[in-house]
Length: 150
Image 1: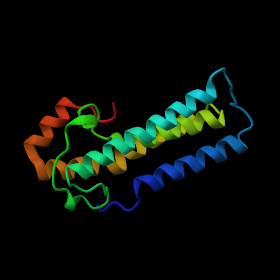
Image 2: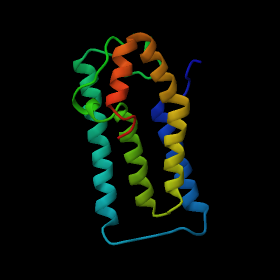
Image 3: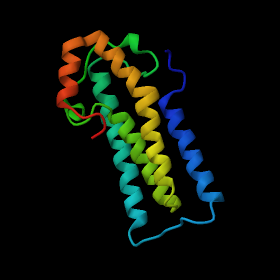
Image 4: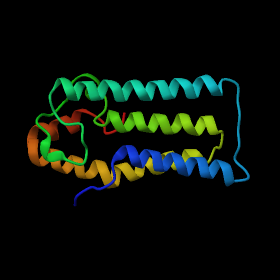
């Protein structure tokens, strides 16, 4: 199956759903001391995780394009990839969680969970199959050592 929706667009679509939910759901609002610093830290952490993971791909001269897996030239397993197999998607999740905190509606956490479910089923599953086909035992070993998200 050829994937057609870029992950960044999926994140933006879930962000739009979060905004709509916050705007039109008449309940679920929350606030707490430190909410603003927390969402700023989460957004910054998300940006940092994505930046580090993209730099690692560039240093290893492999593609960051998730829709064109045939161009993958190497398996990156060090650095941030030692802790998570999908740091770019983890960074996107951190952005969504930060956005949900900024909006202040508790039900946005359900949409963030929906993002994880969507990515697992429609993106990561296909990426993992392609990487296992290309790198075989090396990739299976990496999967045993490193969790999918964190």
